[in-house]
Length: 134
Image (cartoon, rainbow, N blue to C red):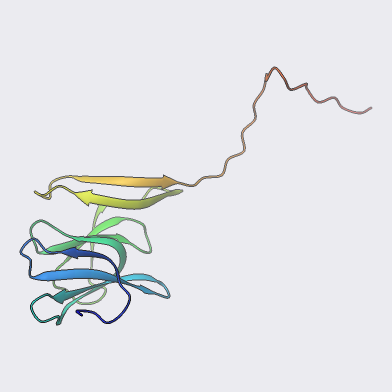
């Protein structure tokens, strides 16, 4: 067993040397990496979800827990190292997941829109206009 805790969303680097995984922490998922040959942790930890190794093997792409942006962080890097925003988040729209092409040049993103609206519909045939009491 590489990691003796409950993990989710694993990914394996293109060179087959590393695996990343998520641990659900109280403030949201955190991303960690191990070397597959001996299960040793590698220096990388970020607060995010749906992480994937970049095609170049030198960065990890993920959805930032705080901003919702799709970002890239150098690999390996220390906890909380600066990230580069690849796709900014949209207001009132949740970034559900994403994927990257094998050459790393394109991303496809799935969004979940959860907005509440109040809409007035005038002229609906079956609805009689309201009358005011005098």
